[in-house]
Image (cartoon, rainbow over all chains, first blue to last red; front, side, top):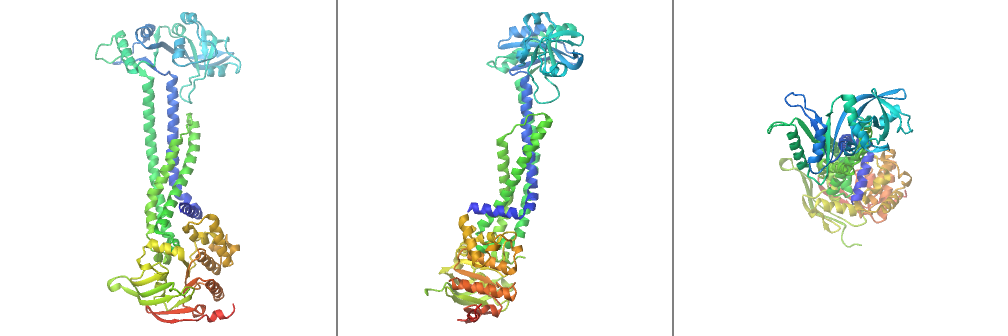
Length: 398
Length: 238
């Protein structure tokens, strides 16, 4: 009997194709909105998580911070050494300095960033070597004129598809030899190209580009078996002591936990997704009211038809089921179109925004089921009205 | 098969409205209809013939009195039970054809079988068979808008026949047709009656009533006379 009802409903929708399409427009837009936003939200979350993970997982960042408008006291190489030696669970601590520079090679120039780092830093930030090698201890100690370049640099000023390793290049006025090429680290598109970078021994940068031993920030990675909160406490205590921050005063440094940052970003994006989804949800409810409206019109318009069906022997509940099914089928139909639209829309928007497109079957199925639910909620009243008609009055209806 | 009449009506009244506005459409009628009969219900408008047809068609219930259809006391049934009764034993043909618009003749004829829950192949076969009986198989895929009035009424008759009802109720079946088409429809009904279907027809045209075997006359909510053994028109070859 349900099969027959479904058939009747499909025939009915086919009889009024244009009207059915217009009726479901609200649902289509609502569902397309919700699913697009949820899909994009997932993509943005994944992209930001990737970005944060590219800073290193299980890692803390320590930055100098401004207190009371005093210029921040910089970090130095001793801080790095002390952290490495005195805190249990620290697997690596590395400093970083950086400068915007112009890179020259083969008569071409290119604006990029130079980072002064060590092999530890490469490990802590998951920077892998694609071609060539890391720094040697001797190169790190002496601050040798060697560099590891990023894929963007190779692309822009080196001959593509020929290994740059062994080539000479110039970074501002400093000549150096390319000893390696690191693997692309670009996650999504965006503000900062992680591949447009030249890595040189930190000593070299401090000496030849900056002129002091200051450190920009320290990255500390730790054994995941250690508790992150305990690690954080010991780090803060140590740094307060080293920087002579009296008890009760704000520290003049900042400590960022990548795991916490991940969580914070996920929460923010989750909130934003929920908000946009709520707005789209309102569109859905409006769409549902549209369905109810058209179903009421339909019941009035088809009073005579209902009379015929009753005369032929349809029971009240069969008439009700038919109209309810029509409403549900209309909503589901709108839902399917909305989901398809959302897939296309989110795919192209993800491309434009430079975030990965993450297909989430659960949210799509939930959206579809929600449509069916809307159909029941907004189709029930018109269906009930149809089933309450008296066959004789209905047949007489003009 | 002279057991008991297929339709028995005893002291049936029907009152519409209440109090001062009350209108007594039927004032206590007694009618018996034998299985296989062809009955024409005649009378001027307002005589109660439509009301009695609604009751005999199990669409409406009497205010008082007893209406037995195949021995079942219909006035005691719920609306849904009456629906099931109509579905199983009754076929309707209306003055205004009452086909579903934008729906092919075949789908219209299939409709009663859909409510009976028949399988698709069986529905199709039975619907085509019914369309064949009214000579409209070539028009099976046409919608009512593409058919003439006479053809539409024949589709409606096919729809009424498709579930092989015991009784066919026809309410002014020729009211919207010209004489030639009317005669065609009447011949069709007469042929159907000869296959054993009981036919109840409301009409105000004496010419059409001549096809019936029994004529029940109504006047002012009462049966004013019953004539048996008519069929004058039927004796004339079509």
